[in-house]
Image (spheres, one colour):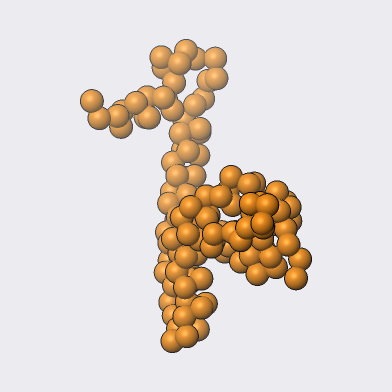
Length: 137
């Protein structure tokens, strides 16, 4: 088994060292092993876990959800159905965000189309007027 220094493992996974330290702080990653010299080192299992975390983040899972996924992965009584349910909830969240973004897009398109003369002063800008009208004073 190969031992990696903190910078090496971070580079291999494509994260920065501060991110790795944060994952350790929030217990997403176990505390690193130490050599007699006191240097922290990581092994292939740590590398695999970091790849798992990175891939789960790319799929939209939060760090809290990733911690749950990792827990399910190692829990002997957990089932694929447990992971499926967690993933279904994530999919619902993502669909809601997509819907929210589509609504924002629609509003922005309407606002942009209301801006008929780009030379008009910002005092008369319809986009700024709509944004300003929603501010609670």
